[in-house]
Length: 509
Image (cartoon, rainbow, N blue to C red):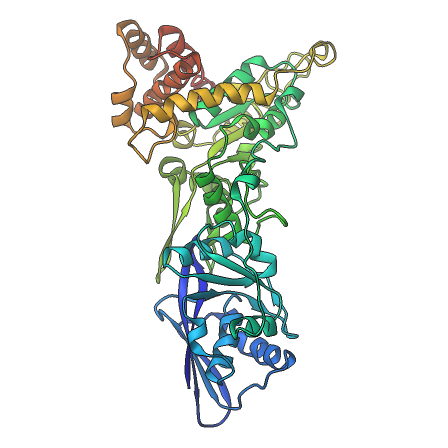
């Protein structure tokens, strides 16, 4: 007999529906899986056999063939266990095959018949809804995540026999319903706040501008100036996540299996801070079975690289494409996958290997050759792609003990939200643009118009500092963001002058 079940998988960060076809034929008992199945899928036969027996059902002593279609796509993961088991039971006559129509199924089986959670359930649910399916059977641990998708009945399943009894209509099971807006209400639930930062007004001003326009940022200063402290608080002043952005971000974490427990929807912007020993595959993504890297896990959030020159040079260079395109393309011989990577890059570094170059208290112990080698680890093309370069001066003891608490993140975020609102109005009708930093050279020319005095100041600075064409356009983007924060229609001379100063550190290095 033949039975068909709709299973689910993930390709990149998108859901993929897979037709699980089970055929029982006469012959010596065997169990074979075809359809480009990887190791974990081929091992499913042992889990499925034990789970069916321990759930109280008879495992058919027939020649079993399981086909996973489309056969041209590699199948990996343990989410096919439950569809295979239900397909075998349906082919054996224990289930009516019609009961499985318009039902997507995913889950890993334990040997005792219980069902374990799997990664990537949210993109699977989105794919099931897009294909017009009516219901989705998922492990109980993943049910809240899948229930985020409206218009699809999600049924939490804890055991194989529970799934069989439900599909046969012998027991009832209520679908799980979740209101995404309630989860989304926790969009400002950050454990840190900018009010903890005392002093450093110029650096905080630069971070506000970066947040308002989505600009990349490089912080340079001696140790202990608060670079890491401020970077960790940057997500708290970024614009509020939209529901669409929250679902995009949650899809990436769900695919990577990193979604926090009891958090079906990520309502706050992610902050990723990989160690400087990270590999290029760990940063960008990839592997034998391609997985999202840190740049994709920072999608719609912040990627913080502390001690930037300590990262391997070839690892830093692979950041060029995602910084420009907002996506990462992982190309393999058999397939090519795209991962989203629209993030803000924030980096921190010391001015020299010992860290104290320019410090008024502690002398630098580095010689000129050591300093030159240290700074040469950062290539010009990479620095050119970082919009704002900010020097963070040391904080005096009196500023730490005598000053009141700084401005709160909520107050700064309110100004940032107003600036982003102006940008959304400006870019209305262009779905690709969300903030000033994403503008191309053509769009900069269209939206950022300078009067004569501003143009003269910028041209003189470009000539004197030897800036590239890319830096020229980045200065215009920063000036437009400063104008948005000030509520001005176009940049003024003061806005252009402030924007120019955020490109000078590159040439001091």
